[in-house]
Length: 122
Length: 122
Length: 144
Length: 144
Ligand SMILES: Nc1ncnc2c1ncn2[C@@H]1O[C@H](COP(=O)(O)OP(=O)(O)O)[C@@H](O)[C@H]1O
Ligand SMILES: Nc1ncnc2c1ncn2[C@@H]1O[C@H](COP(=O)(O)OP(=O)(O)O)[C@@H](O)[C@H]1O
Image (cartoon, rainbow over all chains, first blue to last red; front, side, top):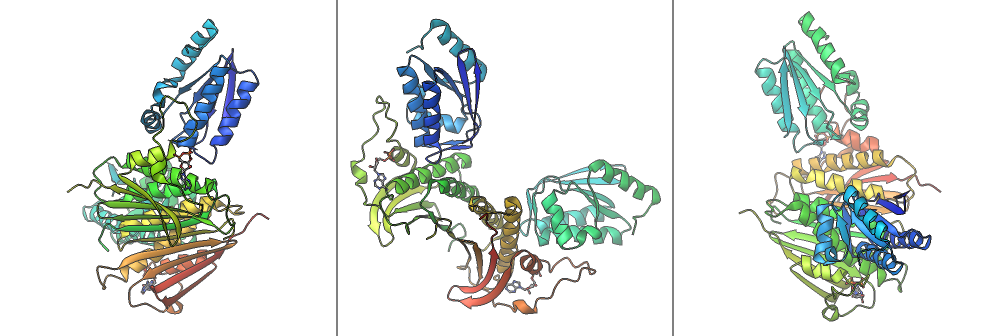
């Protein structure tokens, strides 16, 4: 799976460079997010700009990262969702669960705030 | 079929805006070239930059334009061939028949020359 | 055969690496359906998704069985009707017993059949000569 | 079924608008062939081309017949062997009698079978229960 990771301050920007997130690579994504959290990176920004297609297992992998981040007083936020990918979050009501930002700048600003307060909004 | 035509001096630049030239649209291409020649446009530059795929009927349509242009003391030259499209000309030895230029500038310069001499090179 | 009919059958090894292939074939096919009145790219995504979900389930629930088994998909477009059949060689399940997901519970699983039910007009699961078959139907809106 | 086997059968109306669909399906399929040692995008183009040529011929030489007829294609990958079958419902022809094109004559036609013969390892034309069949084979170079 093609993923790039950049660290800045306490934030970790994770860019998924895959057109598809499905049962073929979602487990790898889940494990990848889990490892980052275990390594102490607690403020994860996942950039989905390159992702054209996501299935239920892909949503599940992100949800797993989200729950794990929360357990550790961290956060996982999303950015770059293409319209049809965003629809999949809407159909499953997950757009109400995840913090979703339309631009990377907004996501960075939001995670800065979280950072300043030393906890996520939940 | 998506084709754009630009006229400058005596030259006509024909840009094929189709990914594929095959038996579905090659007859239309052939007729299109024929009409231009009948309308007195004798120096045709065909830009294939957008064409990812050409079949034998597409080669045939270009050959028809080429022969018709020659009959009228004009010329039809090609530019913008993608490598795999160029291979199809090589397999059929048609790269020895057509004047093929790697850039539009070269094609324009060449057709200017042809123009200055009032006849094509054949 | 009416002028708009398309029939496609594909068999691949039981492996998730083929999910993209089959989903993408369905997308190509949608782009060729004549006179479709809806948004073609949305339909393409939806068929890609229902195939991906159905096949992922077929793969997961076939693990038990012979290595000779394969993933088999049949897509049929006839006039306004679109039918997708996905076969599995597992032990089968009761489709009607699969609950709607609980949206307040953040379960990582259990949204596949939900997507299929939401995006297709009708779904059934039965046994035929080729194995267990998840059969999904949709009526295609056509320009008249 | 070996882990790399893919079998695809598609039936569409007898019309050139479906040439792109079938050619593009073949391209997707080539991208999933495991361990292919050659250049994948070149193979994709070549299979797209031989299918396009064979189908264009099947369409042209079926014009005479019933409107119920359809274009039928079968693609089968099994280990190192790739087989493509294109069916037509026309009167048939003698493949061996088709001459090599004369490269000095600038004929607008007559390069389809040439492409097929050049790009595939073997080609034959026969009649079977589904009609006339142009059958093309290629050995796939695999990474060992
Ligand atoms: N082909 C199948 N064979 C057996 N059981 C299946 C099959 N498809 C679905 N199921 C059952 O239906 C349940 C719901 O499936 P789904 O909504 O896709 O969620 P998930 O696969 O994430 O659990 C599965 O957990 C499984 O028990
Ligand atoms: N499916 C077919 N049915 C009948 N005749 C065919 C068929 N395919 C090819 N042929 C014959 O073979 C000849 C050569 O075909 P081809 O090389 O594709 O050139 P073209 O179709 O441009 O003439 C055709 O002119 C035709 O006579």
